[in-house]
Length: 134
Image 1: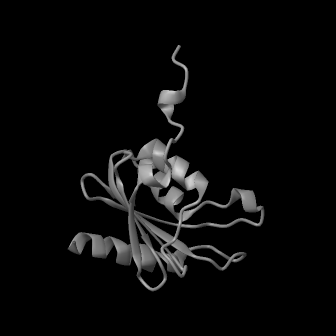
Image 2: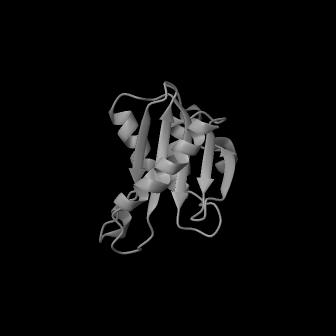
């Protein structure tokens, strides 16, 4: 339990590094590998809104770019009244790189949490198993 509290604290703390000049809505994430290595991420906005990257995708892409692909937990923290909900693009990236039963902790601005799995966040997801083999 102590480790999860540290991961939550890290996701909340890293929100200060978010680049959010347009929405003023910082989000922080802490991704934990199977070996316990931590990767943080924040949302990074762009004047061309479609080029904005979310915190959870930033953390996942950082980890993958460093050769890490086995994950055990993801924490996402935001300035929301209830535990933050990841967008559809982030859910699809989670489905690509995380096991369906991997735990995801969603955290509100007051520290309220909701525990879910990747599968619960994106049931009936599109995966590499849906692609034709050839």
